[in-house]
Amino acid sequence: MSAPDRRRDATGGARRLTRSRADWVERVLSGPVLWLGLLALTLFALGPFVWVFLTSLKTRAELYATPLQYLPGRLTAVNYVDAWTSKLTPFSRFFANSLWVSSVTMVVTTAVSILAGYALARFRFAGRNVLLLVFLATQMFPAVLLIAPLLSQWYALGLIDTYQALIYSNFSFTVPFTVWMLVGYFDAIPRELEESALIDGCGRFGALCRVVLPLAAPGVAATAIFAFVTSWSCCSRSRSRPRLRCARCRPASSSWSGSTRSSGASSRPAS
Image 1: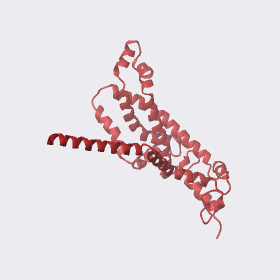
Image 2: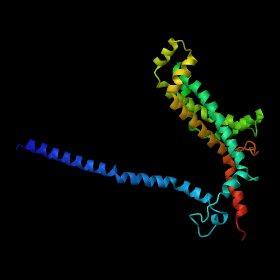
Image 3: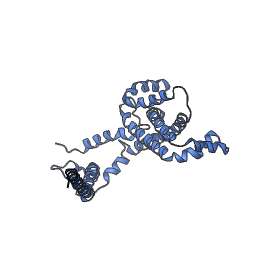
C-alpha cells in the first residue's frame, strides 16, 4: 500500500470515529438528558408562580410566621375574597378598568394598524421608507419620556382622570410597532391574489377584507395580542402619572402594591 493510500485510510478512519462519537453524543443529548434539562428549566421558570400561588392560600398568621412556612397548613381562599370585595381597595373595579382600557386599545390599534400597514405595504410613495424607520425608531425611547407631554395634553383637553387619557396614551405606544409588524406580513402575501380579486370585481377594500386579511390572520392575531399586552403593561405605569387616583379609571396593576401594603400593615401583629 502506497503512502497516499495509507493517508486516505487514516483520514477516513478518523472521520468515521468522529462521526460515531458525534452520533453517540446526539443520541445521549436527544434522550433522557435533553428531557431532564427541559424539565429542570421548566421547574425553575414555574417556581416563582408556584410560590405566589401557595402564598395566596395561606392564612395571615402563616404568612408572617417565623420560621418561614413553605406550604400552607390549611388551604383558604379568604385572600381572594378580600381582594375582590374589599371596600378599601376594590380590586375588582381596578381589574375591570384595566381590562376595558386594554381591550379598547387592542381593537382600535388593530383596526388602524391594518389600514396603515396595508397602505405602506402596497403603495409606493415618497418618504415611505423614512416613515417605516420613524415607526421603528420610536421603540428606542422609553415610554417614561412621554409622560410630561402627554400630561400637558391631558390638561389642555380636560382628560385628567378619564378612560380616554389612558386609551390615547396606550394608543400612541402600540400603533407604531404594530404598523411596522403588519407591513412585513402584508409584504409576504403575493400581489397576484389581490389583482385576481380586483379583476373579479372586488374593490381595493374588498380585496383587503376577503383575500388579504384571511391570509394574514396569524399576523393580525399576533398584533392584537401584542397591543393588548403592551396596553396592560402601560396601565401599570399609570400610577406614576399625577392625579390618576380616582377609583373609576385607576387600573388594577396600580392598586395591587398599595392593597398588599395596606393589608400587610393591618395584619402585622403588634409588638
